[in-house]
Amino acid sequence: MTRHKFRYRNALEIVAVAILLLACYAIFQKLTSTSAVLLESNLQSNLARASRYLNAPRVDTVLVGSSMTGRLLPSYFKEEGMEMFNLGLDGCHSPFGLEIILMRKDLPKRVLVETASLDHDPNANEKTVREAIQAPTFKIGRVVEAFRPENRPLSLLYWWCKQLSGRKPGGISHPAFMIDEQKGDPTSKSATSELVENDRAIEEILVTLKKRGVDVRLFSIPHSDGWGMPQSGRISKISKDVGIPILEPGVEVAKRTDTLRFTDGAHLDVGSATLISQEIARMLRSQSPIP
View 1: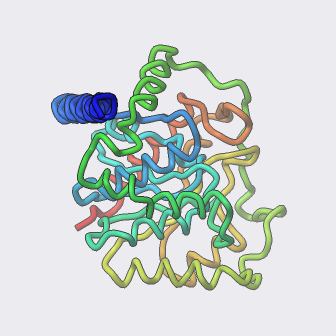
View 2: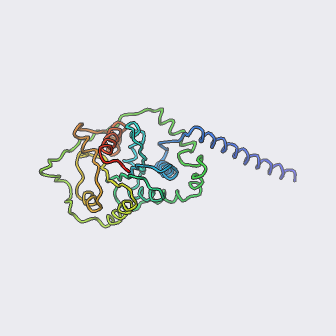
View 3: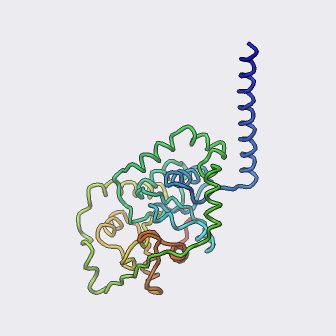
């Protein structure tokens, strides 16, 4: 009997120590507001961005898209005096980011939707993130900040190491491709071509946001050769059908520089991502302000 009591007491002591450590870590999080910006895996990065959005005060402007949009960090916009929330999710399509936006009742005032991933076909990454958002641990994080993905000790350690490594230049340059406006773009599909089947669902979700008072805009992010081309074909048709404008920072940047750098041929490096973020901020400031 004594041996069982000893084991029981040890178990209680372990639980008590765990609770104490968790309480100390929660206090540390509350006092320092320290959280990771870039995380150690695609899934954790996606969950962290979803967590930040769902737990933040009402956001004015949100970027929605894939990992290409994910390179446009909020800090780049902050340097331009603009608050921007980033819902660029690795391996996901833009409509999935819009799905997360609609999980809140208080919608943002303005949403910029990446055109490169404007596809409504669900994939395994989106299914995994959707299921993780419904998991008990994620829901606990809505109340206890220490349980949020961006506050995990491993994620913080990864982010600190990432910061120490410094900003390294990208390894691949892509040239801009400017179009003769009189001849048009010979490589694009006709702007009057029929919509692909799932574009109907894309248009419906964009219209839903508009009806709920959100200023919705498409935006094209440079991601390969020809990044200086304006949008046409399918994207142009969606824009006209729904009645929303397209921001094209690449077209404007191409007037000042003939190359951008990419880490892997598709994702902007730090310098080029900063340049595109600055142009987006400039374009938004030059247009009518959000209410």
